[in-house]
Image (cartoon, rainbow over all chains, first blue to last red; front, side, top):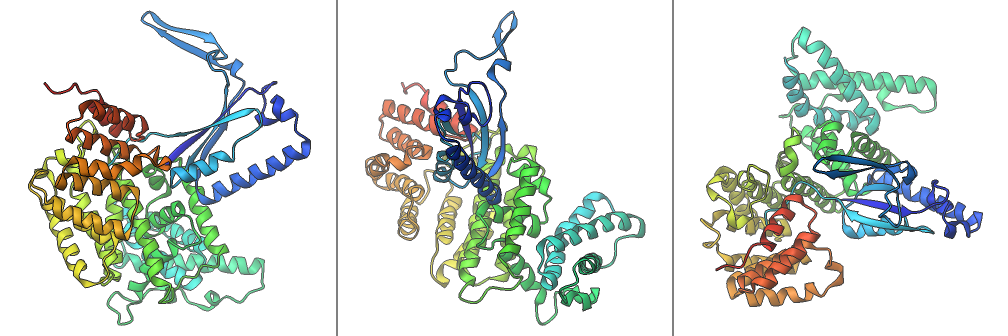
Length: 130
Length: 414
């Protein structure tokens, strides 16, 4: 089963890892960040070794995006950021694991200061006839 | 010889060639590299020189020579170990003929299956390695079948091989005490390959292989090795009986047809007959396991002329046995449907109540789909539509969601 782990955060200035650029993250000591980085590296190594890691991307500053609206006359392009989003999408991880429980166990470890982590199942084109 | 012919020969020989090399060297990575090089050599030489009389022996000879060359090069670099393979002639790698009395070849492909499903590996890695090494699929084919990037699948397979080496996994048959557990792991891996293939068939237009076929092929192999293991027989029967419905389970647009609404004239009668024969042979012989019971249930469905004429009392009994042996929410759901068919929807709904109150099952779309179905049977249409809507929101399968949404928005009868 595939799940996407979405990292929502508003780092200022925009940067990765986002937890270093949020007010909550900046309030933490450097050693604390180093420890979190080590734990995160270990998690990625584990997911890669188990074959559960599929892919991941860090996204650029939302201000660099272009938004496309649709109308019957044609599309309308405007510069970002997408103002309706309170917290911006900063990056995502795609994982492939055996159960929802395992996905929740993994996603919980992505929790970070000044951000919100969202676990969403990925839809697929098959199904069961039971 | 066309490249398609070459692939046929290759797919048939690859596991045995790999097994023959592993028996001597034990180094999965090096053995597989050597096998790959032998295939490249075959692709170059066979079209020009003609296919050898015994392609498998040719591949083993060439691959083992490559392996020896590699070993010698390694040896020259780090001259610290005396390897048995240095002294072995390439011919020593040749497996005994299929009819030889010691049956060495028979055991080899079983040993290879067991090695690929070694307990040190995670299930996804076992699945990938089995398809690569035993079924002889390319990394690209496996990646397409599981809808992951090829690089991800290559990484998964490479890591699995490294992990086997780290764990010191040996190319030998496990001990008699260990064997049943190891065979159970192989059976589970083959079951996962099958369900992936069976349930993803709506999306498989994009791929050039059916995982379900691979799973059946590998399970046949396992069954040939272990004809007396009832659960292996049961697993093969379950696969055949489920796969028999393949042509009836999707509409041309890819949407799903539930079992009750399928055109039974499209079911594959030959597969059903074989599955029924297998399960009938396995059931009386020993301890009854979950695969045999699921196969028996599939057999009752397969033999019913219509959904209405199904022997639900027998299915209810079989689910009760399955629930005692391997309880779980999925079994309870199917059992509740059978109970509803025998004793009426109220009895089935009563069985679902504890599940609906279980917080751990809150993402379980099938719980709500079954709940909706039983409410519909009970004539509670408004509640049924609400439950279908809940099920649709939770479904992660695109055709299932489409089906559930249609049920949720259907106007009340009359």
